[in-house]
Length: 167
Image (cartoon, rainbow, N blue to C red; front, side, top):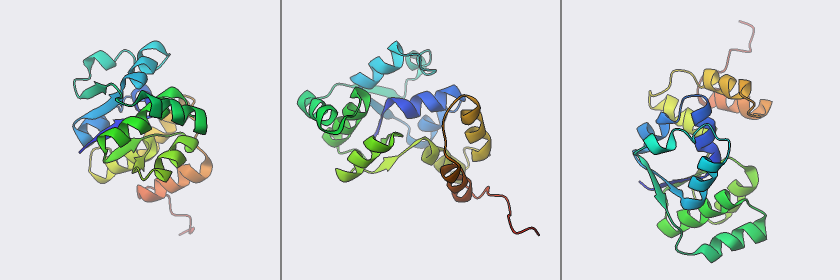
């Protein structure tokens, strides 16, 4: 299975100590060189972990022009554009992206998309995570913006939604 990731899912999962879920779910995760540079030069929680993650594979794009086109035409940042371009080059089974605009572009290009919250739900379904709610609350506590509707949908999909019936 070929999984390509943008910066944000790695960073978000690292900030709450859950980056290991990617390895447990997918064995190997591929990132473009551009995402690697974002992770190690930015203030990302994953920056210190990157050298230790033997399951994280860094690849260079063959078609840099496609990345530039995605940046220019869709106003994507370099990590998002590179992740989409690399996912297309590799015919990836999944691309990990959180940002709404980048997700739309990936979907319009027929790429299967999953984000950080989807990873948490999948991990819960596979018995790798006890509580999606605890991780979502930890992410929110660390400054991640998660809308109420998305939060509720995630808990419903994870079968953690509290009974609202009053019984």
